[in-house]
Length: 99
Image (cartoon, rainbow, N blue to C red; front, side, top):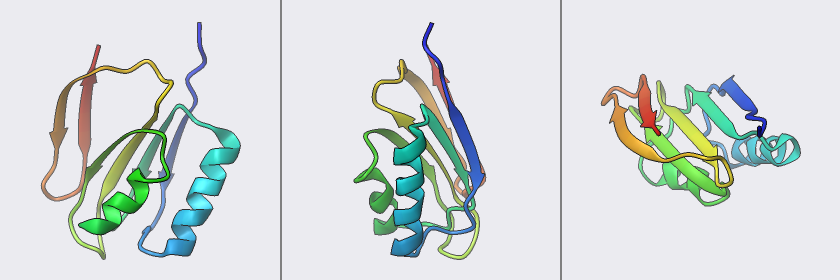
């Protein structure tokens, strides 16, 4: 049976390119299967800045660039098949249903 490593992190904003770089350096070092980020504070094109360096699936619920926002990152080699996705329009939660 494969190990599933999960990181949950209140990131307190990812609008800074430097902070995003630190995050992905950390994730590259520890290679978690799944990452649950809270308080991302990302909107619009900034959300794409998380999808580009991540190898796998990325799900986001955003609100403003100054508050809220959650992200779930799932590594490509993690067995996962999405069957339903629910996001909060206020950036407070994401619900993923999988097989």
